[in-house]
Image 1 (tube, one colour):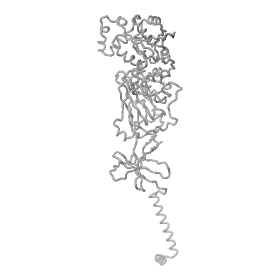
Image 2 (image 1 turned 180 degrees about the vertical axis):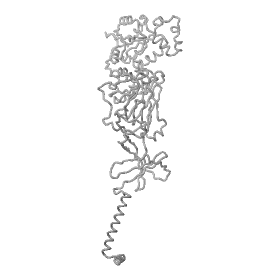
Image 3 (image 1 turned 90 degrees about the vertical axis):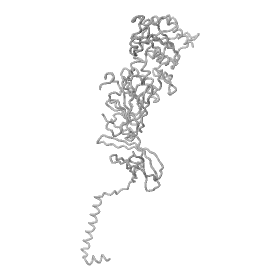
Image 4 (image 1 turned 60 degrees about the horizontal axis):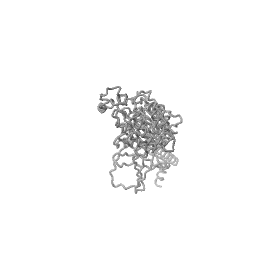
Length: 569
């Protein structure tokens, strides 16, 4: 009333009305200026939770709890992140609940896509007005995107160009939607054994065949915490043999941060696990193909029951073609020659290298493996459609004659009197087959499986005993040259593990062709141990590469008679 009286004395009614309009306009102007300068948020307020550090190495992040949605979206501001040390000991104990949160952040303008796979730990404190959310980072998981992205070290490039479509009927192990692949990264479990090294990996795995590198996407924290961030693997199961391993390409398994500039982008994402192995080393030798590659590959891949893809380094087309049947039996997917590829193949799980848990040749130790040589031979019979599981048992009533196969060789350690051996064996009651192994493993396997006794001079051809039926007989002819230990290690001991009866026949100097190349008193004939002192090259060049055998059939006859006796048992 007092102010109204003053206004009435000072201003007329018209002036009072005019002054009121100006005051209203001034208030509107002030309010408009406030909204323009301060931009207050007029919608429902989000609950703001801060990520508190629980250790020196953890970071402070902002977590937004969107009350308008049941989904929680985590937004990390990496460049502005500060490290907080939580020194307070008086904080209330919180009940911990874990859940998984995945964030997909795609920047189409730069072609970079990132995923942070984070474990959320929620601490419910006693205060009703505040929730403290503590994050514990797991290994960073980068999103895989489809992005189109030297001469050989050991062999000519034209020899290494293995065809990918080994069997056009096999499917490609690729995802229908290859844009992203989310998985939990686990530290690689690398095992270093006497005969093989291998790494078993899960997570975001990227294979660069051009640099022979297996990248594992990890967080910076996990890389700093890791004892090792890279491992060198030669994926061939004959570790310790320098000559063999010298022909095997070395691969690097490396932990790399998701933001690293060296991390390649995926061009092909695969939905099944992978096994990377080498077909180098001694793979040109039939024995070593089985002992160093096929048997370890069986042990490594069989648990997947066909849902696995093979990545082959040092992969010669001839080797792949030779063992295509076995690889198709172990994997339902096309093998990939991974060397020198420009595309980047990505997997969620893989093994680099082959598992070989025994130092014995051509053998499986069932005490530390779920499989045995009996399982392996059953696998071979199934793969090559071999009919016979057990050799013939000769009885008084049975009129069936056992079948003998003589392994023929042309270049060295060949029988020079095959005709005499065949005639003598037939007189004993054998049906005789003379056969020389070739690239047709399937056809030769059927020949061997049809026989009850196999004989040959020490050499890779005797490896075909893996196709013999159980309780068959192997007769190894051992040439001169102090190779008895080789004969025992490579064939006698493995034969026993396969339930194959074993006999051997050691030739005399008079049965060796070396007697025509050296004087009778020469050290080569008189003292092979002296040649061994000169090294393996000297032994190989003389006793294995220059020697043929002329069997004394009368002296050898009792060995075949013994084989017949074994078939009676």
